[in-house]
Image 1 (tube, one colour):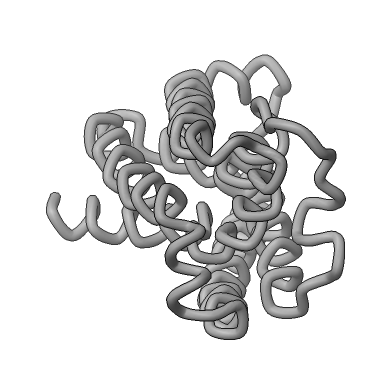
Image 2: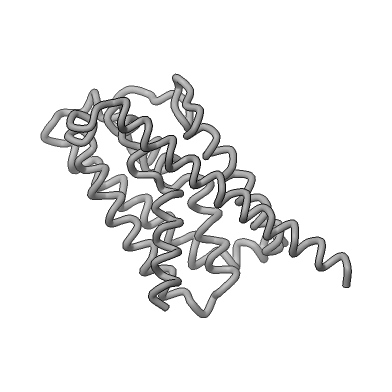
Length: 200
């Protein structure tokens, strides 16, 4: 059980990408009063956590409504993870998720899609759909991953100042490289399952 929770937590941390989101958080909070920045980050992390839990608990029902199979979700999740990972490795001026509007962020772009983005939502849905009986373990993994993400993002300004923009960018690219491998593995698992079903 402990190994499953640990593996799921590491995967979710890579998908949530707290260190890669540091530049985005700093940029999004540039127009926010300094005394409100911690509150805004905490609020957005709570929203993201709620979104992840909703998608995890309602993932199976949502898939049934849309008549989606586990194989389709695995392949789609792998593709999304791969595209996000590519943007992490080869960043663009507008960032991973596009331009950020001025003012105090509310839900967008920090909670969604920066933290609880398509890849994170697809990952938690895939976890719950594959092993519904292990839901408490996956909830624990989300809680641990979001706790670390919240701590990192609350210290985003200090971390960027201490490590430097280049170090933060390099770390984000490294996480993108690891996420690329995970995305390819998820995609291969989906394709392998699909080919196996054709052979039956």
